[in-house]
Length: 262
Ligand code: R5P
Image 1: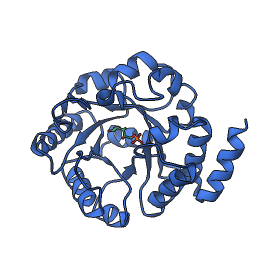
Image 2 (image 1 turned 180 degrees about the horizontal axis):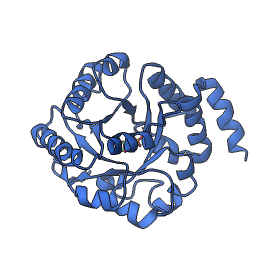
Image 3 (image 1 turned 135 degrees about the vertical axis):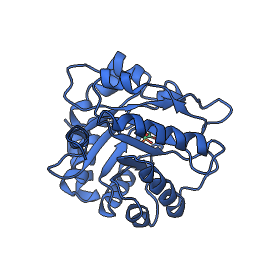
């Protein structure tokens, strides 16, 4: 791997622990002003210093993220769909690699929809994006997005992750599932897990993160379960402790409880 590519990946996956806490704030690209992300600047500001990487789309990055930040950016570059549109899986590449370079990002991210009507289109998006990004040493993070009626089981996610890696993704973002080890074993590149919709309790989140890490994920790319929490800073600190310091869910809960008093 060339120096630039490796350096960019090392900005995201911290060499000291081999792990990462990515903060996802890209939801607006198809969900609009999602709850707690209506004013993205307000949400991002207190959290960015605790994130190993921030994942916005171009609009929020330009408008709401301080260019003086030292937190690396993973830029969402796919879209062209919406929650009320005809088919959520119909994505294209919306942001050029040239603009990603101008924005000085550490990686670009895009979604693939395996098994959907637009599977071929989104997989070709990935292949073509990787072809272009390789020229500049820019890593591509592939998000294994799940269409409305698709089951998030290990067999399906292993298929998606392996395809993403085979097409050249340097990091794959997927969901945690039972038998997650199968997903990790079949994927030759690092995997991060998304959080999904806000869970019932903090403990549920900590257990998910702990299981994902114990079963081989290098970290999380998490959004709603952090910034929709009543105490988002306490939440990200607790998630970090699991990811980078191997805290148990119980210890993470204690940390969350003490941090939320501050
Ligand atoms: C969804 O497609 C977005 O890419 C989010 O970045 C992703 O779902 C992670 O955020 P959350 O933890 O809120 O699911």
